Length: 198
Image (cartoon, rainbow, N blue to C red; front, side, top):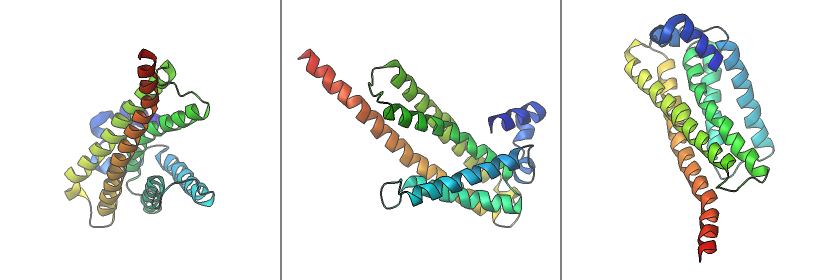
């Protein structure tokens, strides 16, 4: 995704790259293939989580996230529209890298909140959460609203707005969960720190 966006930025600059007709009707080189791959990944991941019950709660946000993406991606691929808009939404997956890094770090037993590894991982987690996930989704939503009059009558705009509303709502929940995890990881260290000083 980064490679696709970088090539477009070099070719067209940011103004041409974010033109409404480019985002809705155009397809950047490798964008269709990247979206197909992502769609397949989300479908497999959804099936894997459902099959092996790798989720918590009645309506887990990760399953809702994947369902919204699968609906939007599949319809866009089938109709061959808004491919480039959806490539922009995949910027948020940079943050997913650090969610997985956190999980692997904890599985490896690296849990000392004062260690440089943990501090760096949390720093990168928060930066990518706010920049790659929240800011990109808010900007895409704002662009959709600003360009709403440019869309043809059809399913594209309502589906795009529904998808982005869902993603922004899920981002709020993810941010709350991340903050709770951050506080939980720091709390044992703060308790131990106070006990050593007493």
